[in-house]
Image 1 (cartoon, rainbow, N blue to C red):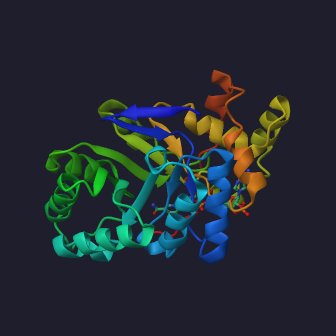
Image 2: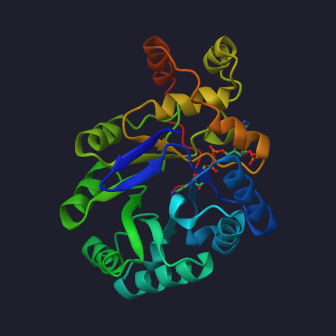
Image 3: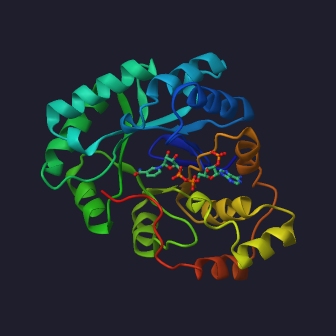
Length: 266
Ligand SMILES: NC(=O)c1ccc[n+]([C@@H]2O[C@H](COP(=O)([O-])OP(=O)(O)OC[C@H]3O[C@@H](n4cnc5c(N)ncnc54)[C@H](OP(=O)(O)O)[C@@H]3O)[C@@H](O)[C@H]2O)c1
């Protein structure tokens, strides 16, 4: 597994997304992923599954310190005390002493970024959060956060797949050493019939999902968090380290951009 090492963090290039995986289904999905070798799990207070995610991490027998666990604070909880409370609630539900990566899930203009980042600083100093990041921030807002924060912003988690270019943000992240975490990396299935992706997949004896994930993680500073409840999909999404794409193929995939978003914007 490729790992990005940055600011003391070790972030596996493929993580498991857990949006929409609740209850027993969420528990089983995380348990299965950990048994297959996933060591990076993405959840959020908004996903209503932190309890199941935490229980699966515990029950998996995988030592806590080799799992990179991300959760996110919802945009209505960004005032100082609310953010602290949300973090403590997440820690309680996850059943852990610390979160590896705590993200501001969406920006909220009504709350000064300084206030939220100062709460993050307190959590980090107390050892409750190892690394801090943001999600759904554009270049200007990420730059603002980086200028305010007295600590590195480890990642900006945004929607990224072949139908949605993130060129300006990615260039910024590569220049300033911020990980770009690609969410909805498979565009929730919308790429599966794409003729170019199908032909590249056939050439390598891989699936479209594997080609797309390989294209993402071959880019400097990019990691991806495909969601998969089916163990077959989970395994497939890890088996992308035994082939590589040519420069021409990578460029052709980049040209598929059509500005198509699949995740709902706030
Ligand atoms: N920060 C944010 O605002 C934000 C927003 C959206 C998502 N996210 C995060 O990003 C994660 C991933 O994004 P997403 O859930 O929107 O979409 P996604 O990962 O692009 O797509 C998930 C869908 O793809 C299917 N799939 C997975 N692997 C496959 C494979 N190898 N072959 C065929 N189908 C496959 C899954 O099926 P099965 O489940 O049936 O296996 C599921 O239906 C989320 O779970 C969440 O953690 C963050």
